[in-house]
Length: 512
Image 1 (cartoon, rainbow, N blue to C red):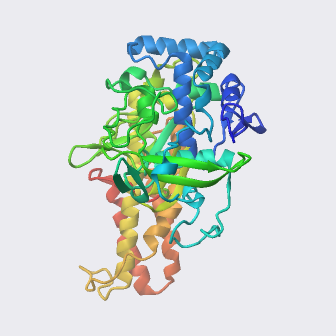
Image 2 (image 1 turned 30 degrees about the vertical axis):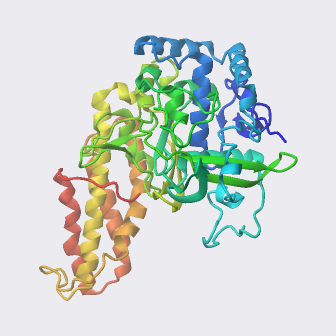
Image 3 (image 1 turned 120 degrees about the vertical axis):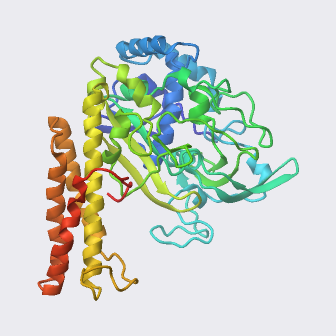
């Protein structure tokens, strides 16, 4: 039983309008011909791009932590000028780890721990592997696969679910694992759980991969720079985890889950899976180069959370500026590095986001994905970048006050005071109007935002957002009818929208 990821067709790719599936070796040999990788679900793509980036860094020599930043940048430019990955370097790298890319290898299955078959009394089940399948006592909603009917997962799809479990897996209880007499049944969350990743997107897979390699020196912490498939020995689950360092250590060396897949006799599908804890001593801190970090009230920097209701453009200024907003957001390391790509690539680079809106444990709400226009070059124009940020913040202030005005109008209509003085009732909710307004506001505000960015029209942007807010205020409150009581409350509260003209105060991440 074998499923060699080097040669089997499992990676969905696009070349122009043509779509196909190829293996790892062909991907790197033809990366300059391929337009994009179309992996799904989105969080699996996030994990795949990280693994591919490690391979790309090894093949190009951009994994060298001893190179000063300037020399590293020169080497990256030379790689891009070559226009493709060196075929000899590709073959050399994959030949060095030829037996490590088999999904069902008995001794070293790719990104898995073969010891789980003996260390776990029971398996987790193939349903547990697939994020959107119900497992255990969970309710059946949109997928009617049950524990009594665990349909096999095609091997090419199972690879992506393996990546999701390793990068976005939940914390809390898991399948019990016993190692040298120590039995535990809980784990920490995967390193990317709840986060939103930002990846450079070029015109080809080759450009995307090379532009997406972070400067190795900035990830050097003096620890271990090895991907799981590069290590000679399997890790000791009871030992001290190696300190993640370098491109491989940071991108593929921080997993909290151990996974093992059971293949069908013909190797074409996965019929069972083990998913459990990987470490007991579990401190694996590192700054991921694809994440935006924000400062908490305690001064600690944490990754920005993925929120399905929040449009990508509202974080665009965090991709081109440092210390954005009240929480002093820090841009992804990899995007700061691409500023030096001043030739033909920087003006065409876009940014793609991947993530999952989820809690820390078992609740997964929605995939998050999006692509920005090719405007990363704005990072080299600080005044323009700051103007972009101020415009985004103005849009958010307007939405906050729009919601506030609608909340107060709804309360006034339903309160005996009818808006005169403080409400007399304390049990009136904000009503449906604020949510309805946010739903209408953000898509239209986004069109205003990108138009003004492209045209570099930043003056009096707040006035245009205010006009939009007033239009939406009228649209939403139109359902209140023509009763004098309702009209009076609506008109009294309309003016609250204009509090936006007085900048200041914090703007939340909000909806939209």
